[in-house]
Length: 275
Image 1 (cartoon, helix red, strand yellow):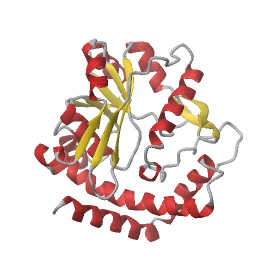
Image 2 (image 1 turned 30 degrees about the vertical axis):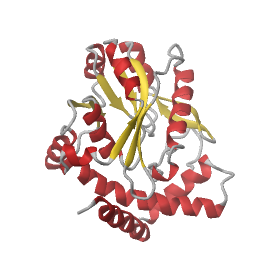
Image 3 (image 1 turned 60 degrees about the vertical axis):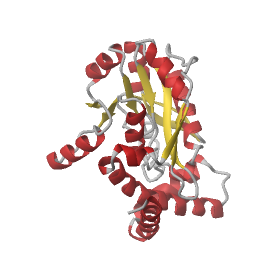
């Protein structure tokens, strides 16, 4: 089917799914209340509606990422900042590619690989069949998938000069995390993984995000400058810094971000749930 038709199907399905995903709708609303307390209720509800449309489109984009030909994918995206990635890789010190969980994440990974094949961290699927399907799809244009728990494998890849994608924007629980500000939430559990990888590998660090353009015109892949001021000596400062970086990326297209994830489920000891 043509892309505009797929876009219509995806967004329509996402809008319709809202009535069946009330728990996820509650989580999205609560996250937006916490992150943007001054946002009007009308603006928040509009953003939630757009977010579910984006969620539906994300499922379509997963199919595009895993099954479309290279030529077809290339027709629908443009790139900003490719020189930043090329320059960072040319130093042969490895590049930590910081990503965020936009709904178009799978397609973003495919487009990144078409620009420059790289590696990525992930959580292995519980189903062997789905593990095979997702790995096969993700390796259409990339080099390897590395279990996010495989610290030695990640460090080895970076020290070998590879670019490795990872996303430190979710709540991975209290172990290996510190509390740092995220938007208007002053204590958000933030993984120390970025800090640890940076210390052990000495790799460069930059962000890559892909967002949908308006009017069904495809996608833009944004590659940032190298983070020259990352505070790699203190894990608390590092967590606060990386959350600011993530905030900036999310604000490129907040309606496309994964607000249905319980980002603030881990709380300091003794504090009640925010949900």
